[in-house]
Image (cartoon, rainbow, N blue to C red; front, side, top):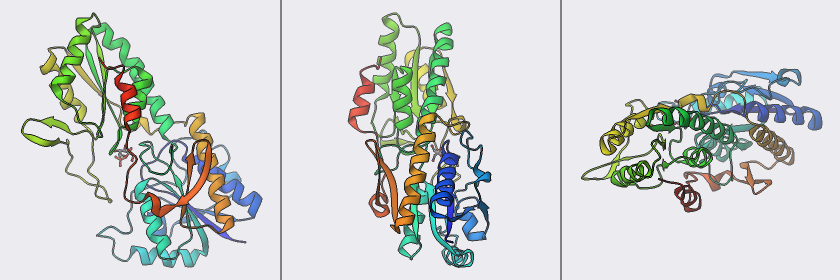
Length: 349
Ligand code: F6P
């Protein structure tokens, strides 16, 4: 009986449990695998912490947010992690794991790729609320985050209108503006600012002023946490940074919205407030779309393991789930293209 490991790495997202459930149920039912949950992402393989997942342990988890096996941003190839890759190889041997299904975004899949180069049998499943993983049309978690952000924008409309205010809504999206763009389009944002697109503050003030001049006395500005605010004399602008970095060297973001709100209030003369949605976008029950996508990825991953096709990741292309090489997605992000931003821009101001 072959033993399969499954792990969830990086930030959690809605739909992880649907993917875990699919891997476990398909793996046990169709291929008689023994499936083990590796606890807290790569940390579990470094520390040797795994637990068996049987049919009962995945019962009732489909609508639950988070991940029943825990996650972390542990990076076995980090500069302070000497010896971790060797520990992982030892534990894989010790637990006799034939293959590992790695559910994660660019960091987790980066580690999976390095391990596959070292001979480990891995198959990736793409997840992240940010939707910035290349190779796939969508990652699961994104749809739920967009729905949460859209609901927040809907709610902010009525209070903005009642108080004649500009509302800045800061959403997640470290490198890309997918959540901001989609939630902005769905929620009818008057301005959307994302890291991929350069913008001029004067233009933003003008858009808002013009809108108020034509009788709309409130505005909604949706902003990605990762934008660079334009500053005079600096071509690059600046990102509001926390000094803390995670294990993959990413600065912890958050807070740019309130700086932007102050700038807008000063630049337009309109009272402005900021709402930071933060981790609410990652919590709670997944949408039906994310449950189905997570399930499809889980089933496809088990099929790949069964066929012995390793070093690959299952992705969504159109309406089909297909495998591609992990190396194809290394070192890049899928950014918001002109099609989406031009569409959003039609409704600015
Ligand atoms: O990777 C997803 C994400 O939610 C980003 O949008 C955000 O910048 C980051 O994770 C936050 O990470 P943490 O939960 O570690 O603060």
